[in-house]
Image (cartoon, rainbow, N blue to C red; front, side):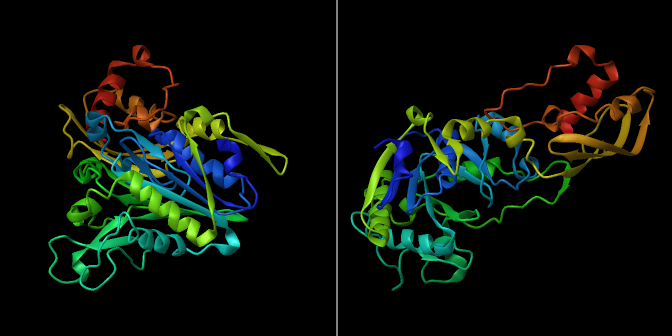
Length: 377
């Protein structure tokens, strides 16, 4: 059965298993499966190469340290669902469950994954007389820290977070599962300082985290991606009936289905996820306060706010300006209409720059201003 047919088959539940680590392909398939409005439950399983995935309603610049991401060469990817910022690499399992909206409950599949991890061959053991992996009131999966001596609340460590997307008739639940991810890298890539950003974006909620392999070292050999995929697949089949499994990768980019007379394609979703409008232009509106008090500029005292809408500077307010350069104010006002990612360091992404480089046409004041902003923002 082809990847396209798998998600729309009648009768049996479906498991779609990605063979690629390409985050753009995997998130495109995640979105494509929802738009197909599958008649039966679907489970999609995949892993990604190193990347930082932000929710659809998050502000890239307030969440991430763009310079650290540039140094680490880790790209940002914006998913279609909500939720917080997460780091993905090969040590992180991703699962996604699709059901009719009428059958959707936020805890159903979180509990399914928790049950799956108790099944052979993974077979995580109980701790303190409690299940090894449990569900909290935020619908996260947690374990007790390896060094914990008793089941105290402050010993809980998150191993899985969730995000959701609900349409008129269908819903999906996306989750991550930390097997052996590079937890230190995520901390390095999060923004902790810089210019003050005010936004109505959804902020990530930070929680102490742990990997399953380090928490259960006696089961580390069994906690492989393959084994975890299989126990989740089997738990899904137990809940919904025998499930047909289909493997997909970039060779399935041409997959397409007509739903209610509208053609749905993987390729369109794949290309949209790599567009400037989606990655940067979808960042919620924000206001950034930038000052020479925080980032010095020889011979200039300046405090100003940049208002940004859909990734474009829409307004500039100068609070203080002291400079011998009489053309600097004009240079500041000409920031209107510029893409914010051309003024501030931007995390790496698959976006190809389409805005012409106007460096040759800039005045000396504009070049000096741009150079300062790259340091200050």
